[in-house]
Structure formats: structure tokens, C-alpha cells
Image (cartoon, rainbow, N blue to C red; front, side, top):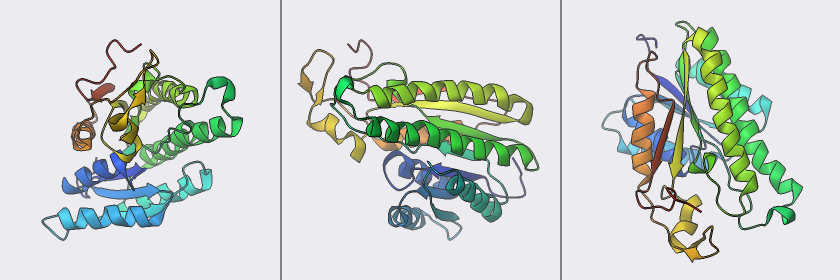
Length: 258
């Protein structure tokens, strides 16, 4: 990492939830952060929150509306980050969607399957590929990619074929990036998150389908606990890597699920 400039990060899905929380934690720790997401307004809200929470005027946040399923848009995102910050030290590969929930696999429309795969897997690949290119070419060479997996990368919820399949695939992507990045000082790890309290997990707090057919309320955890974990992973020297971390609400039905 270049000591002549601030550490710099790209965070996808930065307009809400986990992405927003991680972006705020990075900015508060002195990172320059490129905020990526489909819509400009939520990104600008995240940027304003970073500025208002800062104790100095040195917050350096860039809003880049980005469709992660578009190779051209992703290339533009990383060009903007590199040109603005002088390089990219971290990608938090976070953009994702549950897609339709509670739909039996035999009734799942192909369009829904394809939409989830395009965002969760193809989008993650495109962002990782673009980050890899920048990190490989910059001087000094290297950087870190942290993929947002899920506890669904280990075990599924009922009727979640598309989401679960993409999150299992993210694990394979993480391992491949880790191996291929060795020669270029590019580290890659994965954080598997269970029941962080965000808009996407609102259903856990009102009742969600369990493997035995019951509907039950599940405990959640503060999303800031996820952000602190990502920040720890991000600030390790490149000679050290958290390959996989699982952060979850302590009493959620994961251990023993099913």
C-alpha cells in the first residue's frame, strides 16, 4: 500500500445496509471511498452521513452510480476510483439481491433466476476482475478484495435456490482470486454474514419460513458489528489475510439449521 496517499476503497451496494455501514466505517478510519450503487441519491446520502460523522474536513468520498451487471459501468467505476484516489487498495464486493423469496424451485421464473445471478455472481466477478486489473498494474502493486458471501454460502434457507447458488459460487470465486492473486500481492477473503439488521433482513424480525415449515422470528445483530469486522480484515497488512469469516447473530438458527 502506498504511504504517499490515503488508503482507498471501492464499496459496492454502498447506498444502504451493509455497504453503507462498511463505507462509513472506512471513511471514519481515514480511507478514501468510492461509493457504488444503482441510484445516485442513496449514495449521496451515504456521503453526507460520512461527512457529518467526521471530526475533520478530510473525508474523501466519491459517488459513482454503477450497474454492477454492466462491464462498461464497472470499468468506469474503477477508472474513476483510480483517477480520483491514485489507486485502489480495497474492494468490498457487496452488491447483491435476494430476488424472489418463498417461491418453490419449480415455480421460479427464469427471469428471476437470471436477475439474481447477474447481480450476485456476474456483478461480483466483474468488480473483482476490474479491481484485480487495477491492483496488478498500480505501483506499488497489490491490494485486497473482500467478497460478501452469506451463511447461505454454507446452508440454504427454504426456497432460496437462486440466492443460495450464487453465494456458494462466491466461495469458489474467493478461492480462485486468492490463488491467482498470490503473484501480485492481491489478497482475497470472504465475510459470511447472518442476520445483520438491515432493510433486506426485515423479514427476520417479523417471521420467516424455517426448514421444518414453521414461521419464526429470528434474532438479528447490529450492522455496525459487520462493518467493524470488514474494517479489521481491510486493515491487515497484505502479508496476512482473513480467508473466511462468519459474523452472525449469536442465537440465529444457523448451527443446527434444518
